[in-house]
Image (tube, rainbow, N blue to C red; front, top):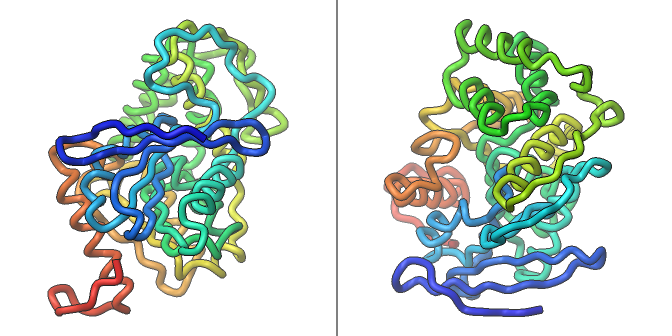
Length: 334
């Protein structure tokens, strides 16, 4: 293991550490906040780099020992150039990311269950973590997780699955991301449906997969010349891999008391947030979807991070006080 001290915002020390998993994978993680606080582990989505949570970690560090890290299969942000063949025979699944998160919790907080926050495909990994390792999770915050296996059949679901299956077959990464963002990150409508179908028809590649089965997903072989380009392709492959995630509904129901389902107040009508509503329905017992300020990634921006962190802490306190009304004096457990 190696350790070093770096700086985040002025006055906030960020400690960087590395350890090696039994399979040889190195996990580099970044910590801010006192070890006397409960652990809040952040699991990033398909961008792959934990720096997405840097501002949120700083904002929460007065109440939590906050830890974020780069996901398996992604190159560190400071990698200048990397000539690497994109993985073609091995999809990194929610289970793999959940296993890495479990290893971090057990390493950093072995005697105290952790709070774990994940957004998008990171939320999928956190859900899998909680289902399979419930004893190490205190509360799992699932912020718009990608769990479309529980979404009822609909035209929108067909479109989402088609988009995810074909995402990594766009030759132009910028074009592929634009098609993804124009559909997933705006209100669903006939116009967005038509635009997506038009884009996918233009793709017209014979090697594009025809179903969402893992057995039929074949990753296109490409060589990337930079870390940024490599990570973009890894993100596309991870997005495709999420199609393979099938939630064990009964197991999830057994841990629903640990699950905090969240979406953005501005993204409630976006396709990317539809799965969390469906997840709440299958969990049953009036499972609620809470709303925090902003949209799918507002917590990462400087303008809203303080409000997002304040609302998140308030929601956690509300839950832990068994539903005491907002504003009533309470004893903090955080």
